[in-house]
Structures are given as structure tokens and as C-alpha cells.
Image (tube, rainbow, N blue to C red; front, side, top):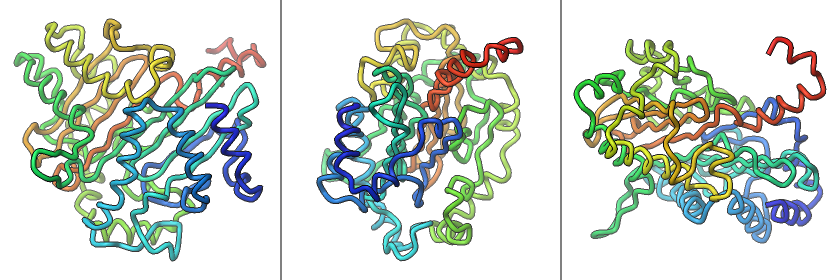
Length: 376
């Protein structure tokens, strides 16, 4: 990973290098966006082909082979989405670009110097956000991580199927079908799915979060009028109204303690726990195997986290919105399929301890300011 980042930076012209590199400390107030808009960093479209490939090699270094395949599918899907949405030309924050969906509008940002003890990087654009933060040569954080797919199921020929998050959706439905009546009652907090993932693009997990208004998910550098115009062209007025008026079940859920939400996975029968393990693998196996346990606290073959809980809202019927989440002291996973007649998925994997390497930063702060430990 370090060699890929170094090769990428060394090949860039000086003017572009300054657009890529930010101080390592910037991750303390880091922001991230999964919406299509101009943001900090250098987009692939502004690089020459050789540098684009170097950027993709950096992305590959932070993902498993299957994870990289998924990421590049998401990027390529922008070309089909452009057609499905009627070839729109507005890209918020990038006037005159000429297309609203562009597989080259993915941005690279590097935190600090790859030769230093602490550094990291972000590769981000529409429906794809990948992070890696490194300390002493070891990846200590790979979150926030976001994958979205629109359309979730794209047209295909014959028996072929373009549905990259099929497992993340279908296994959860199978899991729900294994529940007893009481378990289903505990797990399902609403018959209506939230309009979007609850955490949105918050830098750290907020246990009382509700979905943000869509316009708030765009960088402040993007003109607000352009963003609202863009959302209107996408026909999201109904979606925005749903966000503005969350259901009572969702509000009650957001006010509850994560340790009490939904169903304790430990109470499931072995068949249900096996499905949970399979479902978790669909998230964790996006990353190289050597970071699973250290970064996420779990890897395939381990016992499930004792405090892991599962919650669901919405329907299991095709074309009707659904949402689920997993929570433990270590991780938060969200999955939402509500937009585009429930053919538009958002999924996010978060670490409660190490998003943006926050745990590492706290440790360093306390080592320099031991008096701060008195009230911690």
C-alpha cells in the first residue's frame, strides 16, 4: 500500500500533488461524501491515463480481489445510470462538466506522507467510499466504508444477472424467515423502511441519528441551488418529504440504546447464526484478510460477537423498501433499499472505535496530555 501511494504521488505533476495531499491531522475533522459532487482531492478525470492506473492500484491495495471487482463495477455503472436518468448534464460543484454521471469522477486524497509513521488515503465518489489509515506499516482503520448500487438489479441477458449486492439483501431476508414470532417482533422496529441509512455521511457513528435531508449529503463547496436543482431533476421530492417526516417507529428506534435495539444475535438458533456469519462476510470480505480481526474485531470462522444485534424495518417484497442494521460495541452496518422503487441500495460499514483512525488519535492525544485521562 505504501509503495502504491508513493508511486502515485511521485508521478503526479506538482500542481496536482498539492490537490491530493492534506495533513495527516486532517482526518480528525474529516468529512466524506457518497453523493455525486465536486469535493477535495484529485479526480481521475483530471489525471493522465498512467496516473489513473496508479490511483486504481492504490484502491486495489486497500481491498480484496472481490472488493476491488465490486468497486470497479460501481464506478462503471455510472455509464448505465446516465442513460437511465435521461442523460442529465449537471454535476454539482463542477460547472460545465457536461455529465451528471461519470466513472472518472472519483477523487483521491492522501492524508500525510506515506513515508511517515501515520498516514492514510481516501478514494471517493458516487456510491463508493474507501478509506485506509496506516500506523507503523499496519492498517488500523478502513472505515467509513460505503457501497451503493443504482440500479441494484440492472438489465441483463438470459440467465446473466447484474446484481452485485444480491447476497447482502437476500441473506438478510432469509435470516428474517428463520425467526420465531417473538424474534421477529423484537427485530422489526417498523413496517416502513427509513428513507436512507441513518448515519448518512457523519464522520463518526451517532447513535441518535436520523436520515439527513438529501441536500445535506453534498459538500458545502457545491452550490446549494445546483444541488437542489439536481435533486429535483432526479425526481426526489417525495424522497425528501419522507426524510423530513420520519415515522414514529424510526424516531423511537433512534432514541433507544444500541445495546437494546432489535434482536440479540446470540439468541438465534444455529441456522440463523450461520446466516448472520455469512452476511457479515459479505461486508468484511471486501477487504484484505490480514486486517479483518484487527480492524473489525471479527473474521470468518470466529464466533459471532456476543453483543451483536440485528434490526429490520420495511418489507421483504420486491419493489417495496427495506432496511436492516447490525450493531455491536465494535461495528455498525447499515443496508437500505428504498429509492427507485426499491432498486437503489446504500450500504455502509462503520467502526465505532476506529472510523478515521479515531481510536489511534485518542491514544496519541492521551499520551501527550495524560491529565486528560482523569475525566475519561
